[in-house]
Length: 356
Ligand code: ACO
Image (cartoon, rainbow, N blue to C red; front, side, top):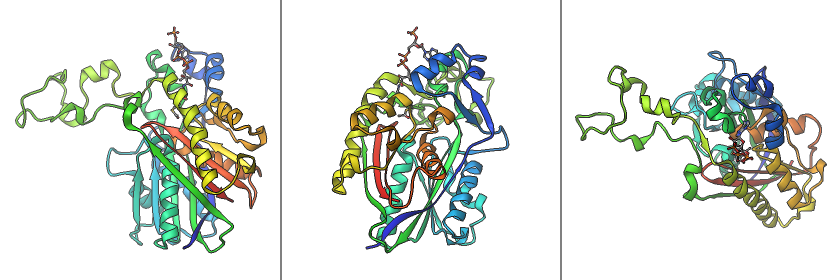
């Protein structure tokens, strides 16, 4: 069996910085509230009509490919994690393939819908494909453009202030070196509380959108609007149903339990201890969650990497962005034991332990 290593990392953050004070101009919030509750000082927003989830992913991917010392033609599979895709379908995997100009090789492209833990799920899948011998160089990407779908009124403030845009990418590569690479991945989910952190509409709960096929259902349609094309109802618009919803405290309580649990699982699997970890990169959900986890595990400040202060929560992109930044800053060196861990909507959670 082969081993899979991280051969290259890349990240892309849009230029536009949006501070907490900028947000307080459009909604009732404050720099003090946001920093105290989340640790976030600013986040990045992509350029409207110029950048998309896919274009940001392509920039991060190009860097990861270069750093891996391969060419785009060497990539033999793409795994793309996002909750904010360019289109409802097709997914961003094929769009990234097109954006990178690697359609000639007709490699497969897979989309992952696991929100905050999307990158860990993607990495775990890549690891299995490499270990089985199926692929040699897999491009694993997390990219999000949250700014396109947030409620910028006071109604949405508890969610909107948390999220930012950006992309991170990794080349997961086959190696024969048994002392290097991914040692263990563990994935979990529990759909019991799916709606506690979710984006609900439009969706199949709405039923058929054709009165001839079914007894008409009252969606609150305004007949003057052609909803057949835009798929939204006025009721949905008025009620802000098409924005993400989150029961923050519920998420918080579960997250601080599941993070340490799953980190413990990968360590046990690899027969290693918490003290062996050189760098923990938690999903950048909230600085308070990360601090809680750090304390619970008894890790020092130099063993945990956070950059949510600058970028906010970039969901599936947060781990590869942080991983890449920690490496760029020289905080991760060859041979270091790195632990990546995430918890998020679904709920889904997971961890990956690797020897860099
Ligand atoms: N600015 C000012 N006031 C606000 C804001 C805001 N942006 N948002 C909410 N408030 C107000 C509320 O309206 C409420 O006011 P009230 O007491 O008058 O009703 C008050 O602040 C407290 O609201 P809570 O929602 O109880 O605030 P809480 O202290 O729980 O903080 C937060 C909210 C930051 C979301 C917190 O629950 C949390 O950290 N949750 C974890 C979830 C998380 O991190 N999610 C990230 C995405 S999911 C993931 O990646 C795992």
